[in-house]
Length: 407
Image (cartoon, rainbow, N blue to C red; front, side, top):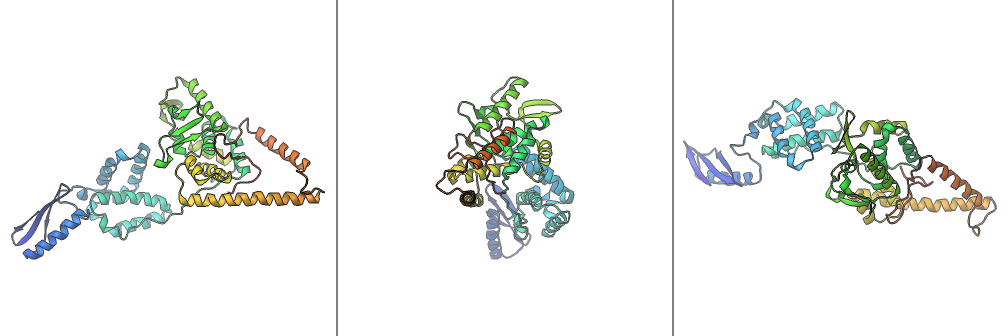
């Protein structure tokens, strides 16, 4: 740290975290220069100024964004990097040729207003603001924007659960077309394991324990998502079907993906499938559920676990990360399921009395026979899939019941 004069003006020269700063203090008074130097050093330590040699503030935004994304490569999955590059292209249409140091708060606010007039969702605008924020932070200029540029508000929905009829209809449609086979298998796994789509795509054969009837999620959205999930009868049957398909295509290796990439009819098991979007959209439309997200299948599975009276710790162990808001919702689901169960008892007792039965009788034989017949017919329509029983998970939950899940 040192003060020196150029002409009549004092300048400072100091280092913070190995970075060299050389700044004019814009005063000819030595005491004022000392105070200004101390403030300047404090600002540098807080990351509020760029050093004189830092080139990113003098770059065009497009160049700075490219450098920002390159520096993030080691911390992001390839798909995330690709997605952020696509977002950067959108931002570059406005700021690409602008020098980073010349971007002002008013420019960013105008960008937000423009995107909203184009009916762009708040979540998308926020992701684009992440690019702008990252570049400005790298140029040590974000402190000039932080007080006025805030993320747009989001609606944090926790997803929806299917009704019994909707789930039955979706799965009956899913098995009806060969071209939907992969999306069908993925949907069955999501409904029976709570796995996210990205977790299903990331499964390798080394993650499948056929003897122990379980899969290990090694890479997930969060650290809590890394977990061991028991496979019930339907999930195990699906995994076995996928294994048989893999064997028909060639040698199955541990590093191969359970859902291999397929491009132009060529299957590459060394890469994971990137998407089943087209099949999923066609499948849900055919089932009369055009707004259903694939991620909603995970929420449905968690809802059924909650209805089974599973504890919060059991739900979190199977599903991985579950927010407190979701847990509060599923706690309410438990109470609602109990209330419906008790209400059904009252309605059955009233029906029995009307038909000449009282509470001393065990059941109404006619009603039981009709119920068993209906359920048997519905299950047989699903080509052998027993879509409910969570074998190996305590407590056992039935997802094919006549009581509807909350939607």
